[in-house]
Length: 350
Ligand SMILES: Cc1ncc(COP(=O)(O)O)c(C=O)c1O
Image (cartoon, rainbow, N blue to C red; front, top):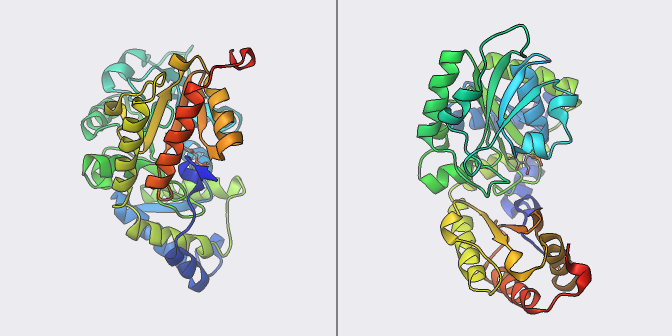
């Protein structure tokens, strides 16, 4: 199977060895030395006071919301933010927040987009308390929110007494693509989360970082949500390897994503502008073939054992990662050339 999801990355041998030999303890009591090391390393890497280990990005997002806002508070987000689009509505069902959704510019919400929608405090309105940035933005195509945009949002947040959070599941992809340390990219944020289990290749886990007080509240929220783990150092050990040795190599994934975009742009019927590829995601428009994205994804899976996702009716997403090399790209190009060239049966049309 060839998987164009960065969540399908497998741990390296070094990670497996680190997991086998990690010193362990009961992390709910703060007694797992490996988790403590990972949390300190993550906080240091992101330039924040503290961090807490989470089982997933979804848990990190929920804990961040619970630590930042009260039930009924309004959170300003980009319309396609993962936390609203693909986390089973936990933002409303669990955190009790009122999402205020904005159309971003390729996923990016600048101060100039946010400021006009903010309302004065009024008995009729929910209190707005948080601006939520996704960097890189998944459904917008792995797009980057730049430090100057963060600076503008910080200025607005300070002026309006709001907090600023970054869902940075792939924030290291953004940092590597820009050639800046991740801590610079999130310096203006009150808090930030990132995933170990995507391009960084660890099997499980996310970190949520911020001030010591914020992290203490998030740790309590994690416990409430059932995310307190005991000898979690077994998985945290892989995360330490990921942070120490996995960040710089994300540049390879970005180069590979450009290769994919160039190759696919040459296939008649498929549209992709390689200049739109900012990190490790390639979104291909299939409308020129008349074949809906879901049908393309289905054929890739059944006929070629290649996994990708249909993100919009005529858009297929391919994400590059450590297990995508030249051979996998060649296989994808061959498969899509055949699929795009085959006349469609009427059942394939929407
Ligand atoms: C931007 C973003 N945030 C959060 C998540 C959730 O991460 P997890 O799958 O670990 O719950 C994802 C997953 O793809 C994501 O892309």
